[in-house]
Image (cartoon, rainbow, N blue to C red; front, side, top):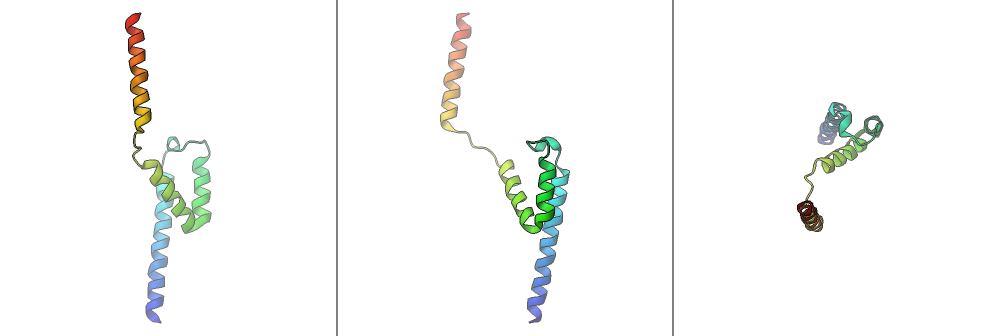
Length: 93
């Protein structure tokens, strides 16, 4: 029974640390990092009142925003074709 309480306390301390760290990460982001004007305030409300669940949601959103974007091969081909058309039109002028 005592092991359960020790594990519960350790888990609670870990979740509290994760929540506080997420709040610090959120508040250290500049306003330019967010799309909307009030996004930082809204994320603070979600993380603060959502506690560990809000922090986890912010972590997922932050990871997806920082993930390297793969280039779509169709857009790449269209971009090359579009650039070649523009170059040929500029050569005619």
